[in-house]
Length: 284
Image (cartoon, rainbow, N blue to C red; front, top):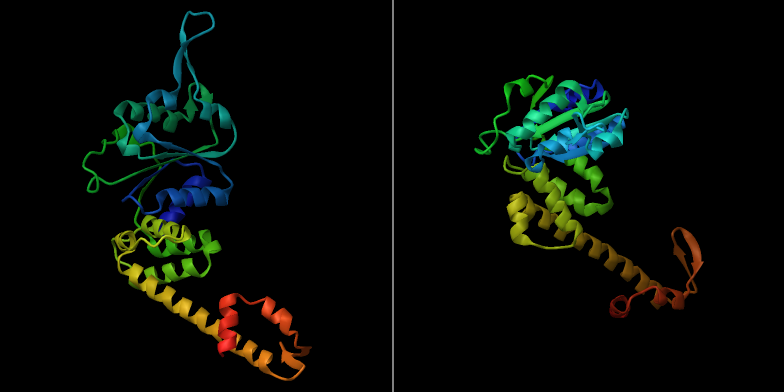
């Protein structure tokens, strides 16, 4: 486990506000989701780039007697109540300054429109100034409320292990791509790029241009591994068909199959072959 993941895990476990700042596509969101699942916390995601202040702090409304004003809490605050959960505030430094002011009270007081949420774990994530010149500067009072400020870096090798588990249902195809990335990776390849490539492979598409764009030289290495894998599979099947041809052409009534003496049922053997395989058997 990398140091940045250890810090994030400590923040979640001990209910300390954490701020992750790093390049896009470096598995910030995936890591928050994975650690939250490990600790048993549901995750509520809010993309602050498109969030209004009232989506965080609630809508103003008159009280029952009409003498004053209160706030109608947002649905997500009413949903969780005292339950432990993670409020994941993504794209924090793309939020409007008014939204950031509303966020200050949530991070500082763990209160939303009068609802106390003591078990709300707060994690915010954003990009770095060198990556996006149009970011909103975070107010110092808000920054000071985050106990953990983690400079997030891409940990491609750790992400590859996680992606291998996530896409294990793809079997050898996922293993081939991940192996190719391990061997030929460059700094330009991010975990997001690898996952998007896995999605293309999962969909059965063969977009060469997009593959090269996502994982560079690893795409060519993957195609070579895939071709070798197909040849190996075909070679094994051809060897099996040659053995079947021997059994069918033998005048013997019995043959040793899987270490056992078995009667040769020629009709059953042929019924299990495709027309192409029958042609290969007849030609053998």
